[in-house]
Image 1: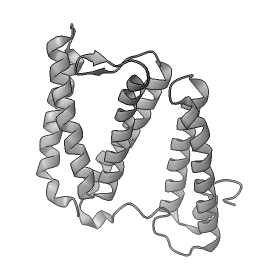
Image 2: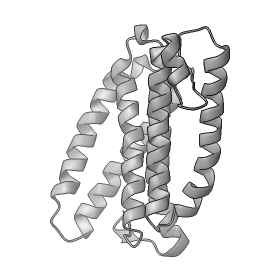
Image 3: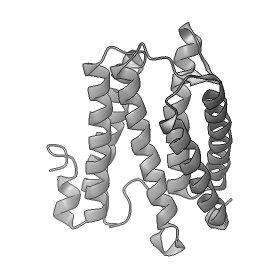
Image 4: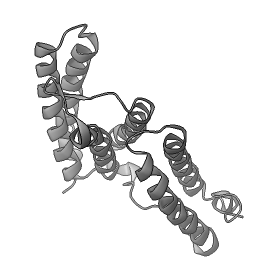
Length: 204
């Protein structure tokens, strides 16, 4: 069943968590593939060549699990147990993964947009790398928070520190309106205060 419809085998076995994981990951892969297919942007070649490999792994993994596994636990055993009391951090991690898809959409839909780093839009390959750091960091933070790992907290603090400094410089040197930059700085500061308050939940 899963070889025809991913997740159907897990659903038939009553492994509902696994079926939900298969469906969610499939939607994410499909959305990322759409970005690469529909938009001619700087990340199009990467998406069109790497996503089929990820989809093959996803498909094969869930087919093997549907056939061989008798466990109702996680298909991709990365999420810590909810009993650890870290569901809020895991939910934040999932939001960061969704933000990475938003980044890809913006980059693919507007390939000519130059991300401002310290008040400057870098040209050429440097500009592509500057834009690539945003979805890359969001994916790393998302995975780190889903795992509730200390390295995820470290990457987030680097991201937050750089984000506040960069927004402050852009606020000082770029013309207005600055409403979005101000909202970003304030919300990031409040968000970081909450993460630091919950920092002891992150495991080594």
